Length: 399
Image (tube, rainbow, N blue to C red; front, side, top):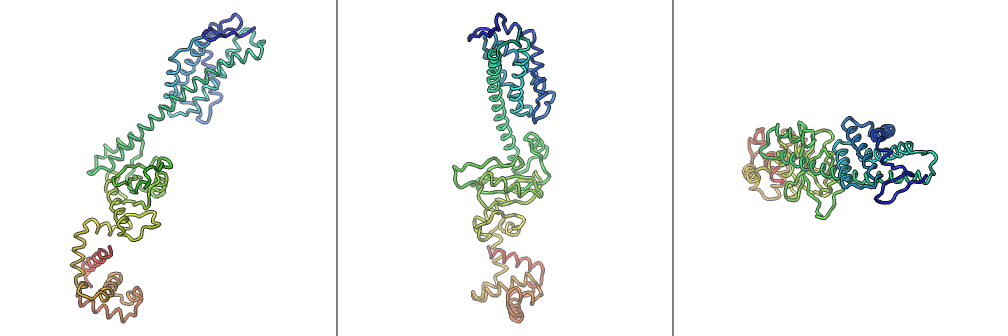
């Protein structure tokens, strides 16, 4: 008995039309496909009810497609059907590996069940059995390619939708004035991002090389948005792991150092954290915080006074000029000595010995300088409010 087949003609075993023979067993063939898949379920585990329905429809469609091929037919709609099957698999959150395994195991089950139905199947020569099997494998390959294409297309669309939803969320988070909390909650739910009670926003410069290719996307828990001047804002939940996630995101995106990390704020006030981080990075860029070489991270929490003074620099310099005016009347060398002594007094008020240790001087020298300071500032040295203003004035002078 021979298996005869010419392109465009029905596949036959001797005088038997295989389509006529197998058409009466469509449901049995589809069940065999599902049974074989269930027996060889992969790492994804048993599919849920929705995925099982999708696979059952796919099994029945694959059998129908196979029978059409046996009749010498090739339907254009077949590819579209299995492209849709791949899309449905991705939308259900299942893997492509599982789907291709389903096709592979399904093809094997179809071959086994079909050959069992063939007349005198056990006496067929091996070459003829393999010829029949090749028709099954060819179909499996074609359906796998179509389904993989559908899966990839659906995955790409899902990524685009996800990016768009995340971009909308971070735009709302960085809005000033803040948006309503229910709007944020809805946007976070749509983006699949758990909205934390507190967030921090970090800001860093984008790669200096405009052609630099990022090493990869940032972690899912880090949202990103450009904030102008070639900088990127990173929004993350505040917690023990905050800086680790920020560092991973900065590395993946190849951001320049240093990275400025804003204060912890309620999620709805993320714009405030971003503004502080931008201001701090401006200070670093301008050299207001000293040498930036080797500086990886700067934190707003460590530079609050600098940020406070930087918020109104003109006013800060006017106040400093008035409060430190008595020192301006001195010669440069004397002004430098008494400025250092004033700073030591403000750090250790009423403790000449501690001041002497701080300055590396004899205590009598410190007392002599204190007498000169009292001649210049009078009772302001002993008034807490006046000392606070003097301390701020000295900080402005250092900037």
